Amino acid sequence: MSVTSEFYPGFAGARLALHRIGQGKPLILLHGLFSSAAMNWMKWGTAEMLADAGFECLMPDLRAHGQSEAPHDPAAYPDDVLAKDLAALVGHLGLTDYDLCGFSLGARTSVRGVIAGLKPRKLVLGGMGLEGLAGWTARGAFFIDAIDRFDSVKHGDPAFPAVSFMKTMQVDRVAARMLLQTFTDTPPQALNALAMRTLIVNGDQDRDNGDPAALTAALPNAVQAVVPGTHMSCVTKPDFGQAIRDFLLES
Image (cartoon, rainbow, N blue to C red; front, top):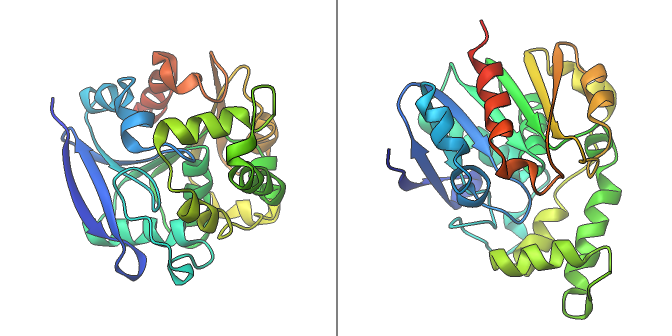
C-alpha cells in the first residue's frame, strides 16, 4: 500500500503538505511537536495498520513542520493557527463524516479545532493529559527556552531531548518559535464541547502533558487506554495503533 502526497491551502493560503494512505472512512491524523506525518504515523506502521482496517488516513504536516511551509512572517502565526489550518483541511476536502486523531501537539490542535466548531464522529487524543491543555503556557515556555538555548544545551539538561529531536527533524527554529506563541491555555470548562466519543491513549510512562486519567474524567464521553512506552516511544509500538484502531471500529 503506497502513500501519496499533495499540497493544500491552509489558513491564509499557506502551502501545507498532505499525505494519504488507504481507502475508506476518512481519518485525519495530526502529528506531534517538531515531528512530521512521516515520523509519527508512517515510519512505525501505524498509518498502514489503520489503512488495513478500512480507513483513508489523511496526514498533514502541520505548519512549520515536515514538508509544509514554515514562513518567517509573524502575520502567518495568528492565535490558534493550527486549528485554523485543520478547519481549512476539512473544508478543502469537503469532509462531513470523518474521525480525528492527534498525538501531543496534534491532540491539542484537535481539541482546539473541535472547540472552534469541528464535529468529527470520534476523537482520539494521544500523549495528552489535562495539564497539557489547561496549563499549556508553561509547557510552551519550556520549548521556547529550548529553542533560545539551542546551541548551548548539553546532555543532562531537561531540554536536551527536545533539542536533539529538533536536530534530527531539522526544525526551522524561527518558524517553530513563532508557532509556539500562537497557543493559549484551554479552560477545563471549554472541554464540554468535546461531546463525541473520545479515546485518551497514553504510554504507561508518559506524563509529559499531565495526567491522562484527569483528562478522561474531564470529558463528557471519554474512555482511556494505556499502552507501553514513554511520550516519545509509545508511538513506535504497535499497541498504540491497535488501541486507536479498536476504538474507531467499535460501534
